Length: 308
Image (tube, rainbow, N blue to C red; front, side):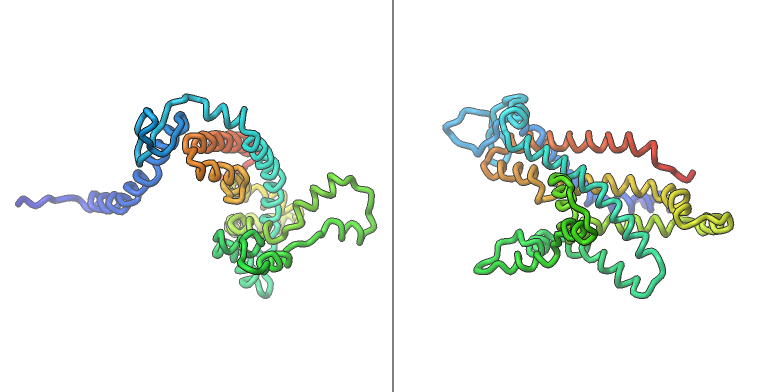
């Protein structure tokens, strides 16, 4: 057999293709093909196969009858729950997004300073990223039903605080509208939920803060810049690309949260064997997420400063 001679660069290239081959096969079988099937199902009435129905056979024992855009029409025009949950999801995201991003930036700036116990403080805020599993979070927040007791609910109350009313009463401020007080209370009442959703964002901001060149800090010190001026004119421009990254991550994380009412609605419809209707809602939801991200990119790209 004739020996094949290859250059070192070609061998390295083959090693790379071999390394990603398994990923490509897995992505094709478990992501791309199901994605195409889901889009195809969204234009059909999909149900388990039965001899009584003379409709088009699909894969995996399913049958479907083409109905074009009827599933999409029913999702927005007929189903009151989907529209209601969608509006509530968008409203919650609009309220929580600035709170999460600002809180993450604040924590990252604090734990980026030199002080005793800094490593422990970083570990505390990184802990939710390590144990961010559904059952653990459900037990802590009290959303997991326990047999014979309500220990999960009692445990979750340790992380709740009615801070708004207590703070306003302490400083002697009264007379705020009920809606305004309720809005502030809903944002600040669940401290654990806020911290839990900020773990990744804090790490990204912390990495960006540590990437600020020492020359910029030295130049600002020579010019006599205050800490406030350094933040607005040095820190914020340098980390602005990571602000955009965190906004995008927070939006996607909020929209795909399993506790999101829209996600719960789609999964509940799927358990009723309405695969086509569930797929139509999922693709509509996906389009809305893309539109929201497009608006965010259009706005933030004008505010982001890139160090070329």
